[in-house]
Image (cartoon, rainbow, N blue to C red):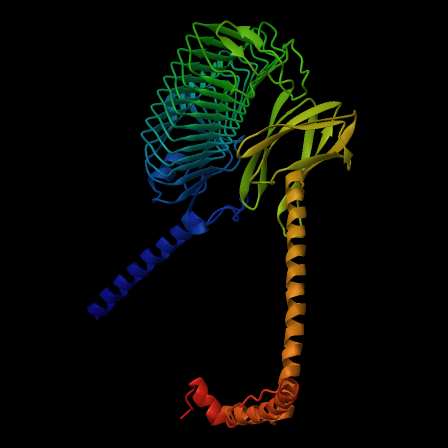
Length: 563
């Protein structure tokens, strides 16, 4: 009886433990009624404040790979993430982690962490990554910190869609490499994005505005890519100090006091940037040489487009240079390039200034991108490609709006030369090929005012047409010769056929042996010859004795009889 009671108690304890564990697991993974369950995989999701009242307690009880969903509200705490997990806020404007002037609001020491839709504010460091790799930070707000987002010795992280405002430094990288910083809005800080001793990072499509000092600042940082970003209303739009081998392309440095500033920096490439409406100067180079500055637009910079001290740089590639709105020269030969150098600074001349803004377009077809460069004083839009019956691209079209000209480069890999240009289906006011190399052809054409559709398409050259004509002529000669040979062969064949038919009538039908044919032919010849010999005898009195039999003839001729 005692054994039965003991077994019953043990069974009840086991069932109770299992039931409570099941309830706890279900509770941790059940979405609160006012949350959307469609966003997260329920089996790995912990909910704050429903399962845990603080974010840190949820992290402490989470496993690697879990998702912690934080509901709207203000959480007055400092958070340390030391394991790979996802921290997701319900709404970045209403899900707030407030450090209350603590040192670090959110500290990430693990790898493969994802943080999104969270506001981190009121700390020395809003979001700090220390020697951390492969993290993804998206759609967060960092505000009212000394450093908004700080990467220390951290690599291969992705920062995209974040807002950094009202910090001393919005985004700061120290000795960090291989990071991608894209589509962030960094404004109203002392400095916007600052790279310190950091290399091989990519900054793309960021908006950096209204910062008190520098919009984007590179210091002792090399081999970085800055592309497609806008730096506006800062003291310095882009500041490059003691930094080499960086590439700046497609950026806009506009409405700053100083557009782009280089200090003790060399071997950098500036291409396709627009430096406009800056109040002191467009670009300033101080003790910075061997930089390549090409295809940039310097527009309406009030103080000066260019200032240079102890610097010698390259401003053109021998064919094209930059566009300067203050260029006083002309284009008499109508190729889109100024006839005289831009008088910039001593030892810094743009020998081939552009007569209009430099524009650049990426055309994607068949999973391949083609770069189209244009110098045009009109607006260009609506690029389209057209294919022939063989499904090969042989034309492109686009719209221009304005009165003027275009100089445009066409990749041969996209459309094969030579080319013709039409405006609204008609000839242009002026058109010529201005330059070509092994991969591209540059065309120049002009048009009347208003909006037009321009079509550039492949055509046949006069040399190609001449070769085509010679080819057709040669083929014609060959056909005539073959036809003549065919006629002669037919005639010969017909003649031979008649001979054979006559012979068969005389000697009989096939099949007969060769010897029998010869014998019959010999007999016929003997008869004909006797008539001729008789006439010869009567006329000349001489008698000729021919062979009387085939065998006699073969013996005289030395012909052996077939065995």
